[in-house]
Length: 217
Image 1: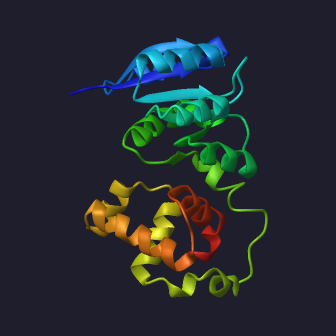
Image 2: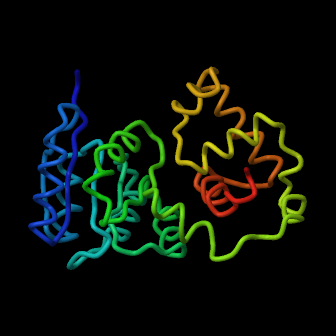
């Protein structure tokens, strides 16, 4: 089986070692480089072209977001998973809009990093569970009539179920298994949901589902 190649960049050596030990524990991954600052990380990614880059959001010289923007501008097809201490919706939006595929809180990184790398390597998005259950949901419950204002009443029962699963961080493959349909059918449901709710973009749909999760029960 061909391994997923990974580069790790974090300026805290102890934390970086912990990540490396966990990632090395999976036979699916191969770490092909490590860096302790943003400039070195970007140069290494350009040279190595890994499948996945795990980047701290705050590093000397270049931040993780700076690197994501540079890779996007240079059209280097590396899936980036950002590591951060900040459980903040605005920062999350900035990171994902820049082009990252994953957002992992450092407090839960040791538990989530393997699953996160696997998800972004498949072209899916990955967000820490703690993130989707706090900042993205908002501080207060929205009014019940907001379902109509948001257009949720337009969704079929299956589309509502897909949206709930998206809010629970389920991948396309996982949703297809739950619903016993093909991944292509799940993608069609996503497209229909976006059309009915007037949402543009996969990340926008995930943010919507997480923010309005209380309305999807």
